[in-house]
Amino acid sequence: EAVVKGKKCGEISEFLDLSFFYLTERWAAMAALVFATIAIILSLHQISLHFRYNKHRDIRNYTYRILFMVPVFAAESFLALCFIEMAPVMRMLREFYEAFALFSFTSYILTYLGGPGQ
Image (cartoon, rainbow, N blue to C red; front, side):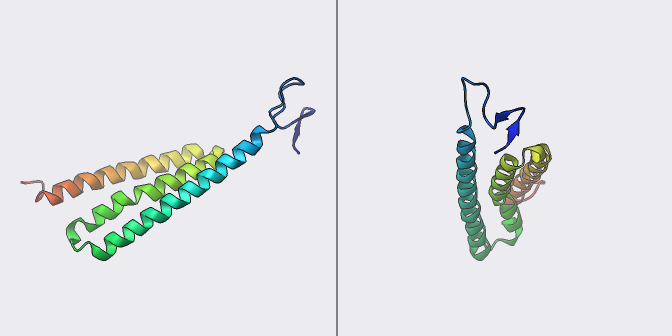
């Protein structure tokens, strides 16, 4: 057990002991891991199906970039939950990928409609 200035983790005072709260955080981290893993597996499966059945070469890459947002966001959310110190850096990387996906979506729409000139 970690002890800070004579108190156990989670213990605020003699009257209020929140040491059980750390067990709740572990359960929250495990639930986040389970749901992030499910989201990543399902989205990678959907990406593989698009790879197999999407025959339009012009819009295929844009579709992959947009669908890959789910694994990126799920992994970033779980890692930011576990490594709080690195959360701002991970958020910056997530925001960068979000901007890239929005650019890909705009390019997808323009390509689907026939190009920017039409």
